[in-house]
Length: 424
Image 1: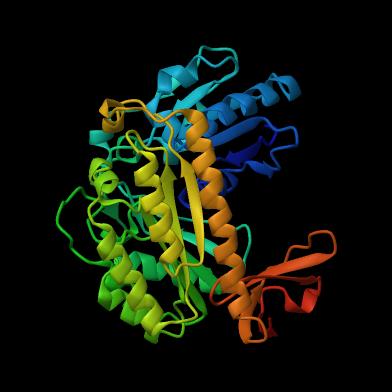
Image 2 (image 1 turned 60 degrees about the vertical axis):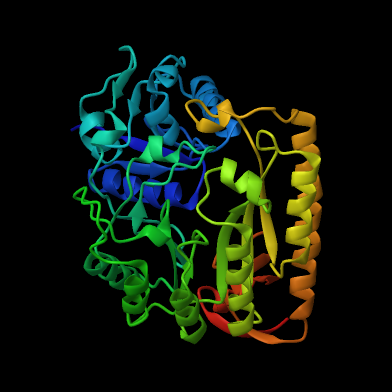
């Protein structure tokens, strides 16, 4: 009788990657694989990579070295964005057996049937232009909150970004299939769904490669609001030019869509926004924030911002700082610009010294800390609904209010995966 093979996964990068890793894991378990933790010894290790930062590339190499030391006879499979962008570079890492590009990662079970240790690394990839199908994915490791992928790829050409090269053109699931998955998740006891995608607001372009919107994001959230059993939805991230007034108004009136938006800004200076090839000016961003605050004063608003983009002067950065300082937002995700191959940003000069980039990052992270403290303090004494997570961390448990304030309290198993009225 053939020995049952075991598999362990490690995910680098975004929530979208986590949803896809979870789906790959269920696929292999359905094929008879035994799932193990990444720290344990396994027959197969799968690393789902990211390409957004240099760090993700380095982390991938470090993980492969760790596997080599721990279990040199195990198979190592690399997939994800880095695998699509630089398959040859990855195949040259000692210990890597298989590199799966964007079109092949969901065929992993078939590839593993044909793979043996000791051969030179195999690459199964194709030109990103040929990737047109959509593969629905969701995470199901933690019943409390699930990341549900409804859209993939991007048709934008931001100067700093490699995602369109790694994930292809914008394409989506159908509303009917998203609703089917939401109902399945409800049956599994999931209370909160986080909608994820590469460019979520562009939802509606078909997985068949059709470039027109057959459906749209506003219609999707209206239908999801009616699904029984799911008590909470969050929109993971949405571009300011695609965050329409009707979407904001709908979230404000919905009992299920949480008062929480994450809206990428990238720069608070219009000159830099134009060089980045973003599709809006900061005035539009400020308008969106103003409308959210008018309709939902208690709403959490998160912001992505990049520091040190080529040609960003002290004046440009100070302009961004002042814009964010005055903006009524709740927290910032600050990214230090890093050079990526084949991006337009490489042609823009002058290059900002790395020491200056890190200093600017620190300044904005301090601003973020102050904004989050202020936002949290405004809600002290209020009673809000908290969904507690089941896992225990050193005798404590965590949960989030509807407007994304993290609550930590001594562990109480009765509260796990329950929504509790909580005085902050």
